Length: 260
Figure 1 (cartoon, rainbow, N blue to C red):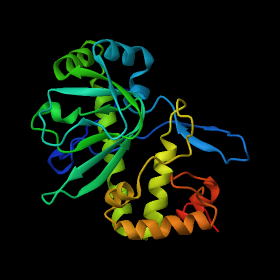
Figure 2 (cartoon, one colour):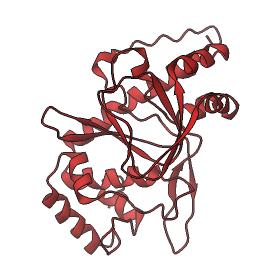
Figure 3 (tube, rainbow, N blue to C red):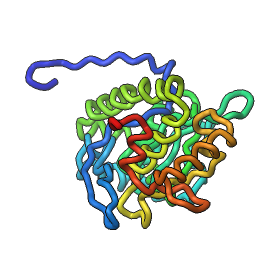
């Protein structure tokens, strides 16, 4: 309750994958050398931004530090949900597999996000969370997490966090269905770059293979390869075997976020 106003949220969580969506991130602009355009980078994002650093550290100290290599799963779809993770370093992607084994990207997460918090209220994991970079997270039991929130009166922050995640679900899924193929690919690249942390040597690199991009967006590899080749030829991406952004302004233009 704030200023006499009671906020009441109703969410049909049965319709939302437990690990699925992104929380809004506070951002700042940092300037890079070599004429690089400004990069939007999250700072104190997600649950950490809502709790504040002091309470976030209380949660961290209640957990066990874990390290993950790129492409290593942090959580697996179908596993029990008796713990959650506080992401402290690196980016992760959230993917869900269908009955045929095909994967679809649901969300990206970055430091300051909580991963797996919904599965603690019952049922197994409904998605797999996979490291994009070298990641560090703190594993906290569901019981410890809930006890700390209650002790510090932070249930409201958790409610705001979950509603914030839900608010990101519809536009993210709308993108996959309705945008042209080029915009799907370029907006995914923008998302990955926007979540890059200060520890990364090359924040403009998109550490996805063509197969990962294709699988994330439900596209064929050959389709993605053709668009990537065109983006390299246009100077949007760097030449070479790895995916890396050469010009953020051009990438935003290709993504339909800037007027030509």
